[in-house]
Image (tube, rainbow, N blue to C red; front, side, top):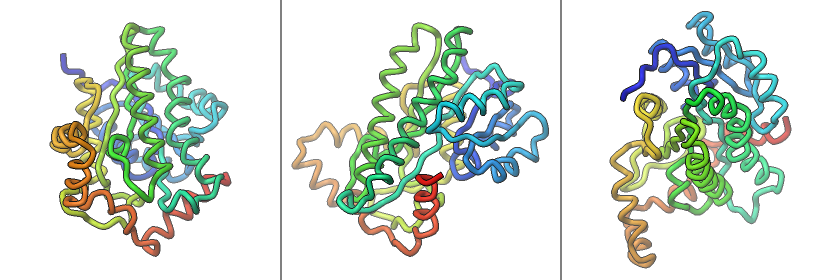
Length: 277
């Protein structure tokens, strides 16, 4: 059965920018009530403003369970929650050997514990009602590791594993779990990353469209673009030596190593600030 978006009550984390913003706006236009959580509460409020009382925004630090409690208290008038979109994430790039310990920890705090904290905060109500849907936004590098983003890749592998485990745990209670794996998304997060052979970039709106489709008809795993999933699964089944040759031919593995530091400077600084907030 296909579900209707109109009338749903949805939380979107990291909703002030990029994928989160595109998702919040798309769902709101389709008639959902949306609570936007973001560290930048002022910017999140500008996203919510055009939609009236049906969409609200509040500050949310996904790494802090106490912040989750405050966020839910401030937005609970829109609930009970039908869906949680765990989207907040950071992607600093660079050699692991030069990565400050504080930054490594921040990557896992935001990308992994953000999803875990959100699930712990919101899923109990879903279980109690016997329905709900958690959508975790991971990344293609959560299935295919690439150099120059070891911590980010590891964090997204963790999100994929978490999604698979919690899906099995919550299924008997009627709660669905979907993991979304986009390729390079044209947002500030991917600034300075070059285009490679065989690598398709997508817009935040394309990811939002796939998230919408997941809410309408839950599926365990969805890639963006969707056609990437099949060849990726085939490549992963090949012997490592053969897969390595294909990787070199596609040039996918070297993309993040060739990211332009100057083009990424503004984003990298904002990501570093998040570790100090």
